[in-house]
Image 1 (cartoon, rainbow, N blue to C red):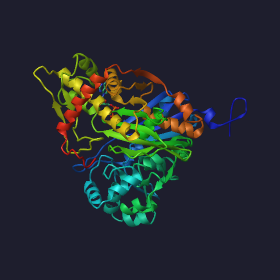
Image 2: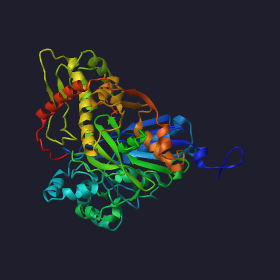
Image 3: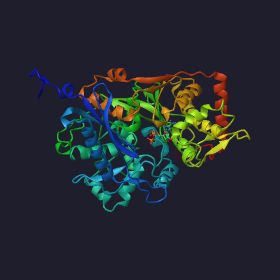
Image 4: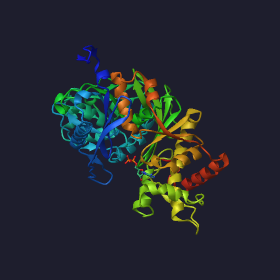
Length: 514
Ligand code: ADP
């Protein structure tokens, strides 16, 4: 029992209200320390090594994920000048779907992690789809039958690593996404668990029943013995092995990165959308206790599960967002820095009829056309570099409108709020255009590291730093609100041009695969 200066017993949460968030992303691992008010006080980051062993294959070494995570946590505590005892709890947010299989007895991975982008199971997915299994998968999991999700990656590991299948059935192996793997390692092998949002991205989790689906396990030939226990997003996930950081720290929150960002943006009411603009764009709308099935090719997923109560979301992913700006900078040399794009876009009065469809790797939601490729349309002899840059920034708005329109149609009403984050929204011009083209106020938070913030909020809820989601919503701070200023006629005219441009690049208007 801890005692305060007056000798009275104190709960750990009151004494030590720092929360440490681990944000283990696809390209980097970060740790951010937040104070009791939710303000970041120290951070550390490491880039993660990627391996591309064959065309379409993407792997990471789980030992790198682990050692980077340990290093950033230690660096972050060092920078803050704090000992582990000062941390009330750890929250974990992570890249989703990436699949790890390891030995229960030793914690040793049996293979590299297969990363979410990996397409090695595309034929297996085709076979299952042709055999008519997609409706079951969709009804149970809210997902589409695609290599993106963990189930076929796990099956690949079980089928290809010698002895894996028999060892898995005998309970010698543990499967997990990165949340589970980190938790297992952090607790010194004591806890094999996942949270509901990460579980929902495996394609093995029955969303309605909130448990692993026996028919899904059969379909993907996965033995139940490899699966982690599924827990709420705020829960007692165990404590860190004291040997790691010098003291045992409770792990009290866990969520997949996009879900953590939804929480970090305090989107707790149905109809609230968070949209993250990095390399790609990921938008989630809270649908409350309704598990909405999309007629517009959005995915049904968990928003979060707290106190055993699931809250659902619809998700739309766009593959190329900031990557369009990178392309203008690195391949075309039109920009010295990404941030120069705002001034260039503003240097012309309008887009001059120029549209850029950034379908570099196909189109994601709501088109799902893997074979579509990018295009620049509407060029005249007056078109300039500034028009191209403007078109790339405008594309962020149009792609968002595509997603919000799909969400509105599925939910039977427009979203209530659009909260944005990610590197690209430092660009004021983009935020203003997002507001204009969607006819919706756009809110930018004070803390733009919303993924880490969400993990910290969850952990803070878990140990009582926050009493409930209402307290988290009060802690969320807006930096700026962008009001729509464009007329409806102008908004619709510009968007009609985009719709036409997308129509020109679609390879397969029906869409087939992610
Ligand atoms: P990720 O986490 O996916 O690597 P970030 O959230 O760090 O991405 O965002 C980086 C992306 O945002 C890059 O693609 C970059 O081109 C773009 N970007 C960053 N700042 C700006 C800006 N001021 N204007 C336009 N694009 C920007």
